[in-house]
Image (tube, rainbow over all chains, first blue to last red):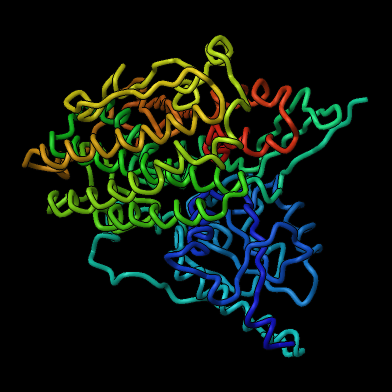
Length: 173
Length: 360
């Protein structure tokens, strides 16, 4: 049973007020180039069929109740993957009065996939990690802390350190 | 007897959270109500507390599909306030990135529309080809979604070898002609799901104030790249595809033809790219008091930014955004009236809605 949970995690994707960037990358990770289906990953239309809840976006006022309801509808054992920097820190939208983020104020998050947006390979890695947690959880061995994934992507060539990005980090700190 | 079917806000047919209440009589939709606001992040208010460098990074995250268009429009407005003119090479690079974005957005829309038709093979094919557009964008900017290419007075990164990019574009165009365009135009599966549904008449398109491909599919030949050229569009030769049927198939065809026009513009921009600087340098930026507006043709239609600034201030006093979905949204009501319930997900997707732009 643990084996099958690890090898066929079904996802439910929820947009908690994101900019669409992470949502597209999540869909891109399911398509032929990245092919998350090789890990048995499938995007499900109903939370009741899903094992892993993938949440993007900084959790707006209007989305927070829906997110809690959907989390309640996912059958246990379940895992939550926060995709992108928005659910982790609310990123550039910090100080906004219409946000209720970050996500871990409302739900226990198992895996944070950082990036704005994360690359599809990073999302797949995060989902694989969540599937392993799911299997462990099914065997009643609960992980103590959420796991933070390392960044996946091409090595930095200095291009990512453009002035705009520097200013963004300042806003966060 | 009429009854109400709510669709959304979290529904497998919707990419983004919004709610469509359909008033039905049997299988026929007689009216629809659209509720938005689930993505409201208060970006316009946040922009007032960010300085002129931070506001570009903030506005890039209004939308993940047309992120470049938002910074381009904002930077053009801020350039008016600071009296800066980007060098010609920067104008060309802006055109290249904007057209690549249009390509990826249209192919993405084709994929989503195919998924809603139940044509999963076409969805996978479209996304595979979209990855090739993303490769080109990544080669140019280093990023897949938020490119951070624009700055006040030019662009951040140069295209070192336009001819290498041109080779990638040509390969991409071959793939488009071989697979995506025939599926769009001649496939009977696509035709049987799209022809004659969700009709928006020319008159209705004018009264709703629609923009972009939605308007062009209803016979309105409007395109800001032609009507009010910005960046280097005045030097490009291209056509504005217009269809007159106003149904979902017409919108599909307009986008398919626009993909070909985008390839044409890209080829011209990359071969004619002048040499020189890519921005106006790191001199101190001084804003003058006033309001500047800028309009740009995004993949979905016209985006307008109105930016107000006070002299000696680091922050804008107001940034107002008008997005194309805001203009196209009321048309959904007229499109779904009289349609079958099963067609409504495809009809509402046919305007290529982007509610994270609209809610902000």
